[in-house]
Image 1 (cartoon, helix red, strand yellow):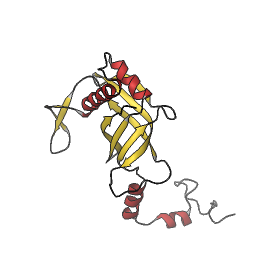
Image 2 (image 1 turned 90 degrees about the vertical axis):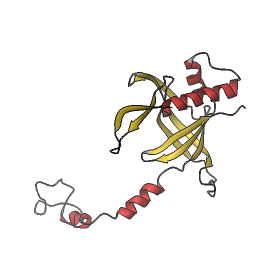
Image 3 (image 1 turned 180 degrees about the vertical axis):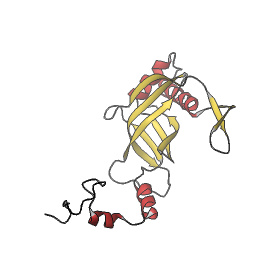
Amino acid sequence: MTQFEDTDETRDESSPAWVHEDARNLLARDSDLEVVATIRRDSMDPAGTYVSDPDEYPLRASVEQFKGRISVTLSGIVTLVKARDKNAKLPEHAVRTQLNFFRLSPDRRNKLVYGPDNKPTGEETNTPDAASLRWLEAREAYKAVTGEEAKQDIQVVDFLTEHPVYFVMFQGSRGLGVSKIYAKKA
């Protein structure tokens, strides 16, 4: 028997089988929240400009009706090309991160007004919301590369998955978020 094996004499019937007195004593301490915070911070991907690589890591697009509007969701791997911190030196290896369920929409909606409790009040501003702005930027990226306006929305979606697209990303409370999209003519 190892030091971590349970015997019938030491097992509390209400505890899971893996928990025995020694393990419980080892873990019966206050969590070091500073250590937790540094692990959380140090495990986050850096904010900065990332680019998609349609040949090696193509983005996936899905389209659905979401909350009463057409919503395009992009997912896939993007590679860091410029760190937000001007003093940061890019490592020799490629820094890649997951573009997670990033939404944009050709259907305009305005930003919602939030109250002191950080919940929507039901009122809107006159400014387009983030999904509308990112769609406009995607259209501008299409135009910058092709030299013309997209005639159909599907052309923009195809462009996003078939051409290198740059994503300026910020560190949000739930990981990286996209604050701008653009493309460069090849």
